[in-house]
Amino acid sequence: MLVATTIAWTASAAELRVFAAASLQGTLDEQVRQFEAATGSRVVVSYGASNALARQIEAGAPADLFLSADLEWMDYLDLHHRLAPGTRAALLRNTLVLVAPKSSTVRLDLSPGVALAAALGDGKLAMANPDSVPAGKYGKAALESLGVWSSIERQIARTQNVRAALALVARGEAPLGIVYRTDALAEPGVSIVGTFPAGSHPPVVYPAAVIAGSPASAAATALFDALRSPAARPVWEKHGFGVAQ
Image 1 (cartoon, one colour):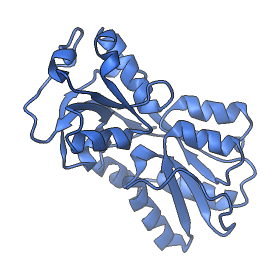
Image 2 (cartoon, one colour):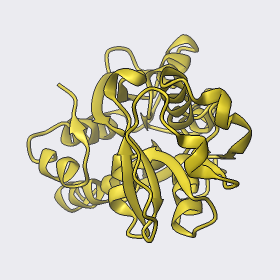
Image 3 (cartoon, one colour):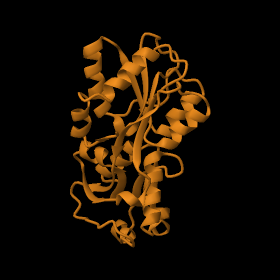
Image 4 (spheres, helix red, strand yellow):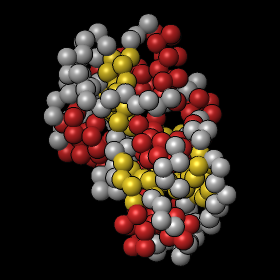
């Protein structure tokens, strides 16, 4: 279950507070446990859609480190002078896929003109809100590139984040959904039925940065360094992420 994205803004200053894209849940938890064991630090991670988290940080939520699922919302915080200078860097890469419930027999070649509307029938296409959430924006760009957005736009079930879209498919409430490959690998109730061509959407890049004015900036930098270390790489790759160089 996702940690609620309504943040308690009275968190203890002794805690290292991380705001992270919903698609990092599970994988980041494993990295954090290793960091806590090695350093004795206490890390509290709040997961949610990158747009919602970025707006909370801009409004003054006490975050020390932000891991976004796209560049735009990190740019947003940079524009509002909420990033500690010189700390921003690309951390991870991901792949966009089409998923169906595990029992589905659907398989689609995600090439221009793909018969997505026919595959949906009267059902819904689950995806994160394409107006604001990174996974949804990537999905919309891919469908537009393939020339099928207008044919299925009215059948989209918009969700607050990518994990909510994944859950709709896993529960059989939507016959198809657009999520990251890492989400699909983490959910036994779905199967990948197609992979969107890399050139059909902007690269899925996860940037991270320490937040300006963080009272735990040294610890936040140490965690960020740990997440980029050679020791962290096998964990990221085990869960399907690519490591940005």
